Image (cartoon, rainbow, N blue to C red; front, side):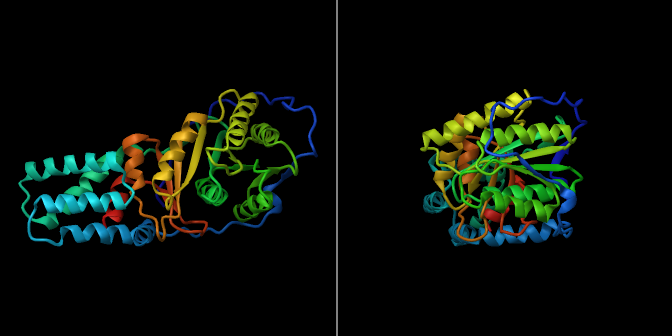
Length: 344
C-alpha cells in the first residue's frame, strides 16, 4: 500500500487538562471504547485499480477535451476549442489562461507539429499547475494530532472522516472520533457507524454544545495516548454567518484543550460543485485558516477542473480525493495522476 502521510516522532505529551470551558453540560459525554466494536475490513485495493476508477469518474471531461486534438493541425481554432473545453470543465478563467499560455510556449519550444502530441504537453502543464497541491498529511509531530474537519451540507464530510479513519488505522495510528455535529439529525449515529466499522473510540454527547464535545475529545485523546483526534463538525454554508462563528468558537475551545491544536483544519468539497468549490475554499480559509482539502464524489458527473482553479487562485493542499462511497475509496492526491485522469 502506498503511504499517504508523513510520520514524525511524537512530541512529549502535555499534561491533561482538568476542566472544561463550559461549567455545565446537557449530559455526561459518551466515550465508546474500541474494544466493544466490531473489527474493520482489512482489504485495500491496489492503487492501479483506484486510478482506473478515478479516470472513469472523470471520463466526461476527458472525452470532451480529447475531441479538441482530433484535427490535423495546430492553429488558433484548436486553442479556442481547448479554451472552451477547459472552461466547461470548471477550470476557471485564470487557470485556463495560464494553462494556454504555458502550453503555447511548450509547443513552440518543442517544435510540436501534431495536435495529438499537444495533449501530452497539456498534461505536463496541468501537472505542473497542480503540483503545489500535492502535499502529505503530517501525523506524529503532535500527540494527539487534532484534525478539525469542516464542509458544506452534503459534501460528504462524515463519510470522508470514516474513510480517513480507515486509512489512519491501517497505517497503525490510534484514532479517536469527536461527534461535534450535534445539529443534524442522526449525525452522531452516522459517525458511530463509522467508528464501529473502523474499530475506534468515539466521544459523543447528545444535545451538548459542539465546542464542549471537542474539548472533551481532545482531553480524552491526550489522556488515552491517541495518535489522532478527528473532529466532525456540522455542515454549513459560508453565508450562514452565525454557523461560521460557531466554527471559530470550536477552534478556540480546541485551543484551550491543547494550545497547539487544531494541527490540521480540513475542508471537504464536493467535486461536482464546480466554481462554488473555489468560493467555499476561500470563505472557510478566511474563517479558519485551512491546512488541507478532501475532494469527494469524483465518480460520476464531476468535471474536476476546479482543482486547477484552486491551484491558481487559492492553493490549499489537497490531501485526499474520493471516488465512491466505500470505506477504501479515498486516496492521496497525485498531481500527475490527476492530470492524466482528467485529460483521459
